[in-house]
Image 1 (tube, one colour):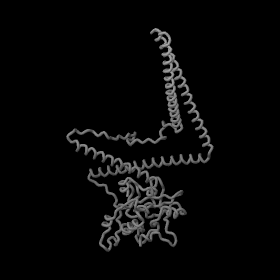
Image 2 (cartoon, rainbow, N blue to C red):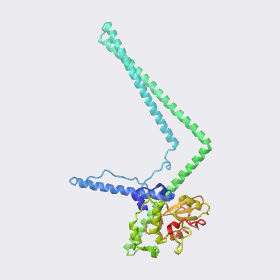
Image 3 (cartoon, rainbow, N blue to C red):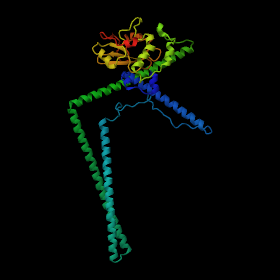
Image 4 (cartoon, rainbow, N blue to C red):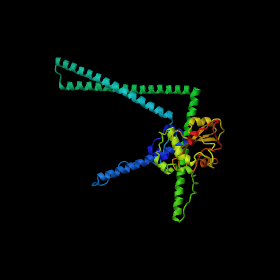
Amino acid sequence: MLKQILADMYIDPELLAELSEEQKQILFFKMREEQVRRWKEREAKCEQNEVLKKSHKPKKASQKTVHWQLGSNQEVWVWVMGEHSSDKPYDVICDEIIADRARQQAEKEALERRKVQEAELSKHTQSEAVESWRQNAENKKPTKEENSTVEQTRINNENQDRSKTQEKEIQKLEERTQEIYMNWKEAQEIKQKLEKEDPEWQETLRKSKAADERRRSMAKQARDDYKRLSMQAIERGSVAERAKNFGGEVKRPPLPPKPKPASTVNNSGISRSERRQGIRRVNSSCTRENIIKWFKAEQLPLQAGWDRSGTCVAHWFHGIISRGQSEDLLKNQAPGSFLLRVSEKIQGYVLSYHSEDRTVHFLIDASGTSYSFLGVDQLQHATLADLVEYHKTEPITSLGKELLLYPCGQLKDSCDYSDLIE
């Protein structure tokens, strides 16, 4: 199932709701690794195609490269806004943005006003030149020195008038900018004062900050768990390599054998493995009929949902019930109560667990030859009963205390898995 999600790079929103926060963070990291891997493969293919097309030309280095900035721990450097000591507060950033916008608006208004004044001045200058030419034509023709003196005086006067006008415009621009900024600052102070006096807004702000802090904590814990599990995998690989060099071999305890009921081969002589090859797995388009068909064809021969003795259906096993139905069954139960149900969205199972404050749901991957929770390096179990028995003493997640203490059974005079075992 995880391979199918990474192959499609898409997960149905209803299926995403079945995952816990830790599983969502782990799934995000796995999808990111898959995207980087696909990008590298595509770049390698593009380089090969360029070499085949231009085999007569010397090979050029690819210009498309990505260099991740690394931190002090040689991991990819990630910056979260607000966590660094040098990050500016939100109010300071808003003040700078508003002041810059006010300055730009005032400059734009001054530029438009200056263009209008220059156009009017140009018209006035032209009219004065025409009038001066007309008067000169009527009067005696002045000498060249007098003409140059008069023209220079006129130009100097115009330059002085223009400089005074520009100084006034700059002064007005500064006053306008200061006025806009002060008006915005006053509005912000009034808004903050009203918000501080509003108890509902204070409660909303407190909840928002608590939710942000909780998300940051969970994301940080998920990253730490992912690194820890990756280091464990690396250590296991290095130990196996050293043992191989010294002639030894690291042996893991084998999984207990799966039960082999007599119904493995049906009347037509088709074995379970042959049936599995003929069944196509899908994620989001599974209907109830398809899930029932899958359970009867693949899971019922393995006695999925039976107790460890294999004589009867386990007390905690339920049929294809919805998320809401499972929460209704567990809401009046004691903390530590649980049930295991067949998912109505995918070909798999969901373990619904009732904690002290809420009900959480954990997706169980049944697409392989064993059963395990969705995640990285999860422990695999041969049967669902073994998975439940193991987590009676071991928590499901590394952060929680999800011990399966009290199984939640069927309601009176009802059985929700009858359509699966008929």
